[in-house]
Each structure stands twice: as C-alpha cells, then as structure tokens.
Amino acid sequence: MEAKTNYKKRTREEVLAWLQRARDRKDAFQRKANEIFAEEERLRKIAADSHYYDIAVK
Image 1 (cartoon, rainbow, N blue to C red):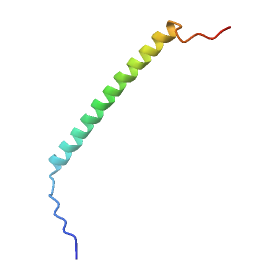
Image 2 (tube, rainbow, N blue to C red):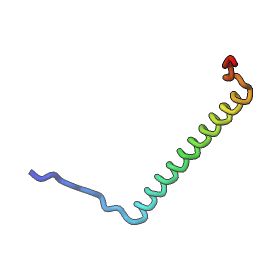
Image 3 (cartoon, rainbow, N blue to C red):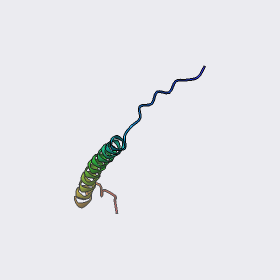
C-alpha cells in the first residue's frame, strides 16, 4: 500500500514570506539574547568594581 502525499504547492511569494518571518524571529531572538548578555556583563562589571567578590586574604 502506497502512502498518499498531498502536498500543497507553494508559490514563490509564500516561500519567501515564510523565510522572511523566520529571519525576523531569529533577529528578534538575537536582539533579546544580546540585551540579556549586556545586562549580565554590566552586573558583572559592577560586582568587580565594588570588589564584592574580592575577599581573598593576602
């Protein structure tokens, strides 16, 4: 018994629109990740500048 394959043919415009939406989602995710990374770096720098973690006995 053969499996039926009923694929809807997509136009070039539909495929390009789908790819553009995927690029937009990727860019939005990358921007959010960069914001989170920048905030963590800022907090890490504040902690380093305050010597909060610098408790080693010399």
